[in-house]
Length: 252
Image 1: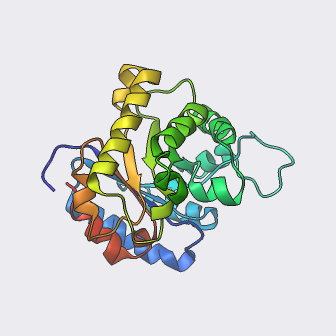
Image 2 (image 1 turned 90 degrees about the horizontal axis):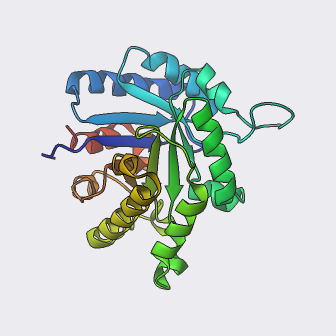
């Protein structure tokens, strides 16, 4: 892909990955070193159980390791929760918040996502906030309305230009093999960009907007070439070295 975009390619491993997955990370680190990316950052967000291992492996490399969620609380009697401070303690740099699977299966509201984002930013983590519509919402022409509402209620009020990233993931596209057409992706990303500029001014122009939902080697180059698309949030394809590498091969 020949352009000067500054891209972020993020792999969200979800509830996948064991200690033996370290081999994939080692291979990825070697590939990144040899490729010498100029305009692309690569992020892997594994389960918390192996995040510390991956973080140690990636030191002195250009691979970024992040988390898939964090608590809106600092510490205390919150069984099973992970605080942003704990993520920083094992040298994680980013955290995904508001993923549709968290919103749906764990009843996370946009208001909760905002609290988590504020807490993460307070602890010097970069935040990826996810937004996206369901299939029924899309069919009823509510995509922009839904995303606008999610942005309004999820976004923190204070940011710097490089500590917030937005990921547009249409819920109906995740894991389905289906994706919106290029025009629809463009319209949504342009809409998000305008909302960010309205809220944050000049800083809003510099916020990366990723596309997520069934990104793979067959569609990655096409998607990444769309205006206002500054990278990809990759699910299943990021679990397999060859598949993830084939996406990264399109980047520079």
